[in-house]
Length: 223
Image 1 (cartoon, rainbow, N blue to C red):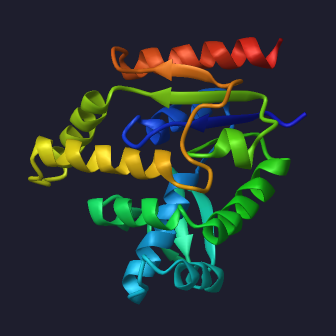
Image 2 (tube, rainbow, N blue to C red; image 1 turned 45 degrees about the vertical axis):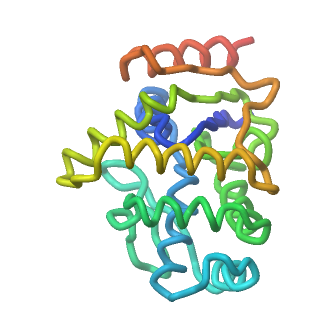
């Protein structure tokens, strides 16, 4: 049986970096699905698509080719042959991703790609609806979270290191807005499944979170 690990959680919980570290320790691939929605959001913004128009966004998604490749430092996200990895982490693209991810047609396109990739390859997949929609029969299901204040603090520090002067209060406000949008959308709202192990990283170091998740995987995989 192929080892599939599903990890869900809110924005700023550190899913991508934690998932990348865990996957490396296990020697399996890490698929960052959030980056795929960000890529769709970026592409729609560049094309001038009205993000409030579900039909237009869905049609745009069906007209582009979104794929991933493994680079030396993790996943590279590609749209129509262009590596857009370095352009999808801005606040504008984050909100665009959250908006387009509400649409059933967009999610259907992305989920099909994700399921095909995971069907034959051991991997850790992280995102918002992995446990429910993408990998409902995953070997291990996780919900990684932390308090809104702590998630905003981490995001604020990351942005500062990149020279982004956005105040902490604005980061926290945007994060809470993103939480509300993700948790209240009609299609696959963000919430932990009953069989997911909740990992609250608020008071944990990065390494403690990684070790904790590895212990959970060991237990579940050999149960």
